[in-house]
Length: 227
Length: 249
Image (tube, rainbow over all chains, first blue to last red; front, side, top):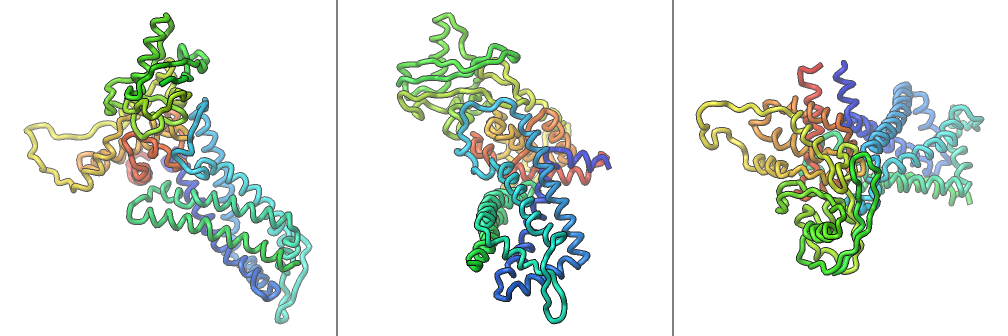
């Protein structure tokens, strides 16, 4: 199996892992968004609470959830390994650099954008994931069945304008990260062809705008509803 | 026109080096960038100072010998080689900063001259292409579709100047290596050894200490031969499929 390690340890292999974990996290964003948009339904969180309970009790989803944490960690660890390697490849920086002439800002700052997203994920996990799982959480009853009222936790959190701002800014950061990451992942996998690459690039930009915008809509709407 | 040059001076690979400022006057807009440096060196020689060392050879844009990181861009503001850059691209009174390629795999020899033999070692690691000996083969004996021949030729136009490495924020050599892998992998003659070639050239590229690819596209945007990013994707494909299929466990 040494050939597997050799391949994954090459600069190309490390980028392959970045691409695969990145694409998984992109898929995760879609599922996560679909679930979260139920927070905006005018039913006092009933759909969202039932959905959350269904997800939490499904063994398959729990496995995918653990994988998701693993892939986030892998994506972050490999970005650190690659950044250190890349810094070593250019030990002396240029005195004058006109990088804006040949590349986009987000493509050159994926590491900074990613670090900000990681900080956001930690805040997000502490605020919601940890509270849902281990915090003292109110219960609610629908049709005789008792559910955790996660909606109440979210609604309470988004009464705080500071929290709303952190979420909205983080989604803007995510948008820039995705605007490069989405199409870049396909290039790293070796998929570049005039038949589909223009489509992937457009899809990537569309995804980078729509998905973070919808995510950001949730705290904004819930904040406005609370007042 | 009158110019102020800030030039990187470094006596030898181990010395620290630094910028030195030179004033030049009476430069014609029709001069090439290298001719402007020739004028500077003539001045320096007359004053008994050490002239600025820089790489150059054909001065026709085909050999890949000239380099120079000019005002923050490899080969200066246009997508050409430095020898094809002319002083009409600058204005009277401009300050021009000239630096060598910066990469650990391109150590500085002197001033603006860097050692690009790491590129040669990558090419050597690719090995050989099998050809039959004997009589002269018939023309068009091996059918090659026109589009494939064109694509291979586009990749083969890489002159190995190293602007891709210089432009890349990671000092990555992916565009160069992928062009060299592509030009042979596309053609029937090069297909025989293409898997081993991809494995060995990527291994050598990593051993030389070049960076990884962030797909910023800076390399292709600065390449004087306009080598396309699709070459890098092809290299990734070739390398991964080689890893899965060669006999090297």
